[in-house]
Image (tube, rainbow, N blue to C red; front, side, top):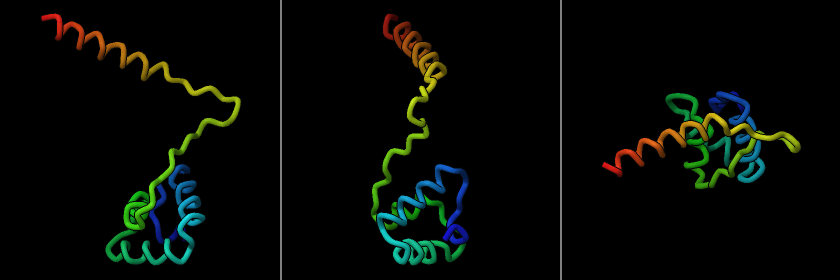
Length: 88
């Protein structure tokens, strides 16, 4: 089935496996062929075409802690800039 769909990373591969389990191979293949008349469709296009809502994919294994320090840093900077802007 992967030969019909554009797989960019492991998350796409996992998403395709989940979609095939939910919608069935026949439906997914038919959708991929329909969408792929000009180019291979992305997995997200198959989700939209089939009307399936994609679940949140978390790549943190049990026992592993996700590092949010970079995002927290930038959020703090944004909040500081907004506070300065509002104070004017």
